Amino acid sequence: MRVISVENLESLMNQLSKDEIKNHIPKFLMVSIEDKSWKVRQALSKSFAYLLRSFAKDLTELGLFTLFKRLLTDPEPEVQLASLQSLAKSIEIIPSKILEQIAPLF
Image 1: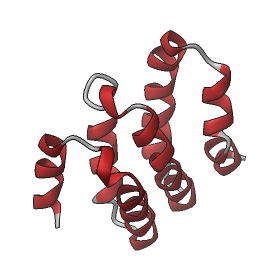
Image 2: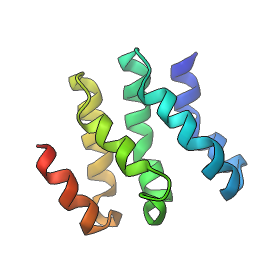
Image 3: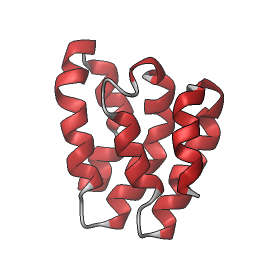
């Protein structure tokens, strides 16, 4: 059930206003990132391409960058791979200052 809710994050966000997204989505993301199931974290990693593309201007304001770094360094290789794939899909829109902070993780 938790995996399905993460997989439907994009649809949910399309129903919310920008203020509702700022108020609720970061909390949802934090809970998902801390989930003990690697499949939930993997599903979230896959959704991060959408988040990065949709909120590139607000990455630091929404705390998305900090959350994304946690997924990139997750202990499960499947989560790391999904995170790297999201990063690759979104790399052209991520500010260079943020990319400079990601590079030392590898």
